Image 1 (cartoon, rainbow, N blue to C red):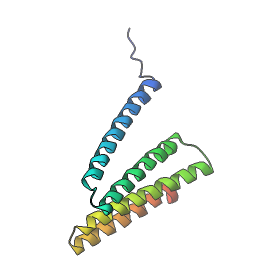
Image 2: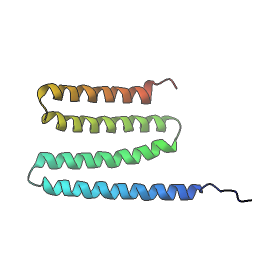
Image 3: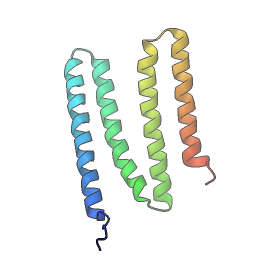
Image 4: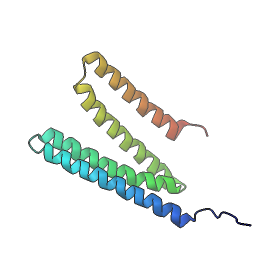
Length: 128
C-alpha cells in the first residue's frame, strides 16, 4: 500500500525562495526601467527609488515578522512593517490623487487613511 509523503520543509521553502527571487528580479527590472524612463524627471526618479527601497525593506521585515520572534523584537518588527506599508500607501495615494479630479482624489485619500487605520488596528489593537 502506497502512502503519500508530504513535501519536506526544505522543498516547500526551496520553492518559496525561488518565487521570492523571481519576484525580486521582476521588481528590480521594472524599477530599473522606470528609473531609466524618468531619468529627466527627478521627482519621478525619486518616487521610483523610494518605492523600490521601501518594498525591499518591507520584504525583509515581513520575513522577520513571519518567523514569529517573540517579545520586544516582534513589536518593533510589527511597527516597522506598519510604518513601511503606511509610507507606501501614502506615496502611491499621492501619485494617484494628483492625476484625478479633486473629488476622486479626496476619495483616494480617504481610502488610504482607512487602509492605514485598519492596518494599525489589525496589528496593534486587535484583541486576538
